[in-house]
Image (cartoon, rainbow, N blue to C red):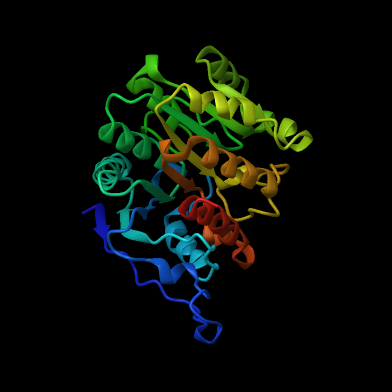
Length: 307
């Protein structure tokens, strides 16, 4: 088979019994049937079709490893690991369908699901899963990304550059998309015009560098007019020195502190309406000293622990 479901790996890491019951790390919080959960999408097909640096298939394993030894916050909650959907070769569409169905089923049991990609083709599956679970809900898309990812699918089909165009094609009238951190020079004039024509909300990287709170009003408005929020984080929104291990490293990027602020603001403002999030484009083969995985793990920790 070109698409397989694999069980979650065993989470292991450092333990500090001499420091008492509060010396807890995230690997000690992995429990069955918890309210929060993670699932991996091990896939390179979308990045390869988009002519990027492949290696995102190994992203879920690297992210789990980086998460395992992080200290748990005082208000820590348990979370489950639902394993991986693994795509072999070019079976992208089949993999997206399996992931979407798995997400929809998981959201009936968990109040927040964090998907570990995979390239940004993960987003098309993530959104479809949320829509399957909540067919009548108004869903706002919040994307933290250097790229608009509004390319139209080519002869090979969708890719890591097309997910939001594909989402819009499902239901143009309910398409509500806000991209935070995009870089003008990383998006062609055709993509910028398409974003304008489709009413896509945008806050560029320059604005966030000048003012870390520049996106807060747009985020508040997105949340206010929707029933649910889907948050997707492309790690390449960060600068190359903070995230070298991605498909397309950013020469400028948005500071990590600003991205953390945005994630925290979205969590606080949306509350229970933020039911689904994903982190994508981690490419361990190009990740010097694992710094990108460590950075992504900081954001994943916030999403899982609501901190």
